[in-house]
Amino acid sequence: MPPRLTSFADDARIAFDNLADRASGLVNPTVRLGVTGLSRSGKTVFISSLVHNLLNGGRLPLFEPVQSGRVSAVRLEPQPDDAVPRFQYEDHIRALVKDRIWPDSTRAISELRITLDYQSASGWNRLFSPGRLSIDIVDYPGEWLLDLPLLGKDYRTFSEETIALAETGVRSELSREWLALTRAADIHASADEMVARDLATAFADYLKACKADERSLSTLPPGRLLLPGDLDGSPALTFAPLALPPDGRPGRGSLWTMMERRYEAYKSVVVKPFFREHFARLDRQIVLVDALQAMNRGPEAVQDLERALTDVLACFRPGTNSLLSSLLGRRIDRVLVAATKADHLHHESHDRLDALTRRLVDRAIDRIGMAGAGIDVMALASVRATREATVKRDGHELPVIVGTPMEGETIAGERFDGQRKTAIFPGDLPQDPESLFDRLAAGDTGLQLPDVNVVRFRPPQLEETGGGIKLSVPHIRLDRAMQFLFGDRLA
Image (tube, rainbow, N blue to C red; front, side):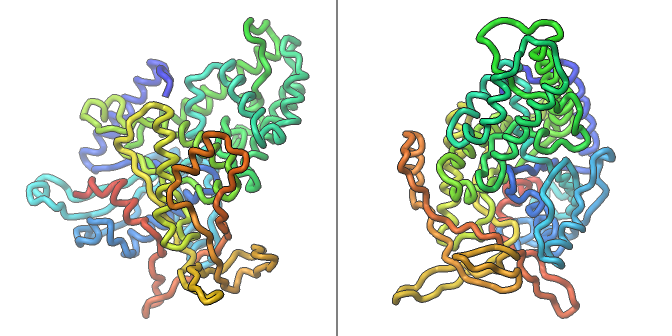
């Protein structure tokens, strides 16, 4: 991250919050886990499945504390932050298990505490440890994370970078109306609220068009223009970049001055409180990405995902926490970047999705010049909505996945009703992504990405035990994610 993102007053408050967290942790050991992701990557589904599998004895062979039988009890408890909305686990899991629909996506911050009673693997630790760990799951939109780099940018830098990006590739088409308004605006004229509102609306419409499924672009700050919440219509959200001259300063009372002031207000009112009150207090973090959707949308979406990952990883400082750093400015010492929807591929391609995402992350790490220590990458499916099978075609066995497409989903011209299952060939990812990214970097206009069938399947129908109890939600590698994110804290 750029230096000096916060004031000394912010630093003092962060240190105070960390001291309070540390004091509470002496009585009740806690790890604060941040869960975020880029658009439609499945944050809500990840949290719901993680909690459901812990509460219901899910199959977690790679989560050592459960596999070894050292976890004796798991329960939900009241969260510590009374001013933060509770993550509505019960509603989301009902949607998944009973209604077999995907829950609504994350639109604001929420929190949930799950506590595990366990027996330490070390006899010495059993003498001193209470054998209890609370995991405070902090769920927040990925758009908020992508706002953090704005803290290190003034209005001129923000305007120049945003307009330059808007003039590239498919963005140039999506931004045409907004850029025309921007270039026609008299930045030295007296500030006019209607002009400001028109510019802000056109800019927000451009960001929404970039985010839409047809494009699936990822680099979209300022994020609150997409998710305004209770700030909708406020001056802090009624601003946009301007086409500024290479030098000079804004005149008093001008449109330029108004936009610059509102941009700074956005950072003060929206970005800084999130950084200070939530992000700076995290211990571990998972970032979910939909790499398959990006692949399906073409080279530009893949490059934009890499750009977004670069901005995301620049927000973290993975490393080991010392006692002093934990108290005064603690680090997020483990970051997991997870490619979701692995169940949309045959297991033979899971390692390829893993390798593809790892290459994206490695390139992002190289671009920002940070070490990769404390960062891991994996492909997973928080909820496995398909099963695997083989079909014979022209004398050859073809690996397929079987599931129930969502109502209205169309495959090869056939429209599904949400009840009937079907088998599809999911496509193949490249065995070695290196050549793919070399051609992307070289701007190869003839590059054709692998054809991957991205179908929206309904959540699976869970069988019941003899007592009428639903089985835990099936998944792919969720246990491995748990082991990396907090398994060591249950040692």
